[in-house]
Image 1 (cartoon, rainbow, N blue to C red):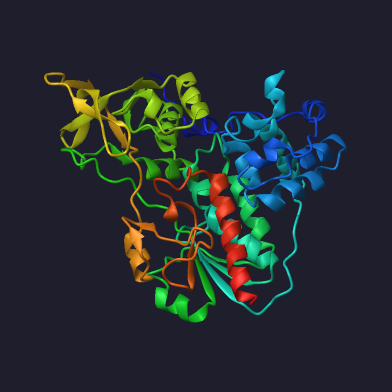
Image 2 (image 1 turned 45 degrees about the vertical axis):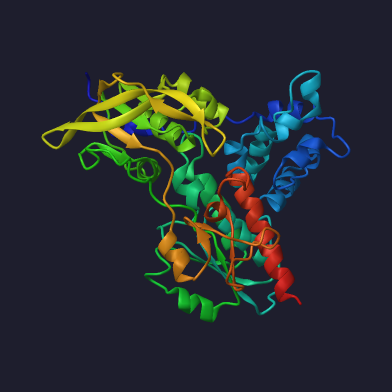
Length: 445
């Protein structure tokens, strides 16, 4: 095999889907019926006035369009790329009944891309009210909370453990779907509101919870989730076993290497992060990439468009398959021992439980294993604030997002659990907004 340069690999991580041309955007905008009481608005968790921003595109008012989008969704440029629009706004479009829905996501991207390319500053900070709020974490929910609070006149400080702000959007979603420049622009829009973002600052290490509780009027906990947990099988310490979160992060940082070229890679899990890990592996030159999942395609948690994208990339899916042991030689991964499963009785979660089939063991020759079976919780940090939680899921007042400590509010993945909706970037952003309004209501009394 001829040597593949790192420059060639980097090209594989350029954004896959092109944006609309001016003509395409103009024509698509004029397909919109501009519905009164539009169902697409109701289907958007952040309540973007979709007919309004589309009408502004049609009239050439692109700044007005971008501002309409970003007013409702502080990470609207990112969401234009990663939202499951077919399930949300486009799924609710009335044109589904007669033709095809308006390409709302693409139009949203068109308007926000214009704002990015022309370096638009869309908002100004509100008049300072003398109150202070600390936001821990700069993912979608943390940025949204900070933006709304800054518009309301609060002095906001974001504490971010990583070297750059942006959280999931910056580090956790692959570059060929969401370039880091998009998240950087959204962060800049918030910094323009006099929000102080302290990066490389880990709460609990570089600054204590006691200090934050003492120095700020309110605190927003938007810390997301952590690393992928262990599989609990033999061989996880071998060279060639990767954490999917760290793996995707490395590709976002540009730390590409040629170690995957010509290799056989297995990804364990079937969520969006698993899909990202698999498609990244393909772009790093892997010859064969398989996703193993212990349930069936109907229980897969990845979005349909992510699944379709992976199949187009040539990713192979093995359903009802459970890894039992990672096999190694000279400290490196050489194979994965698995067992086939079948669905048995219905469990407490309402789903049929996978049951091993006796004598169905088999081995897959592999060079690398990527774990993508969910994420751990930052339980230690949660407990430093003395907050009530359930296995790392912070308990909140469902109306105010207030935790068991009246001074601390929480939003995003740190409160996400079964029965609390679907964890999406757009819902996290909406939660951040609602936290800001709840804090403002309390501090304005």
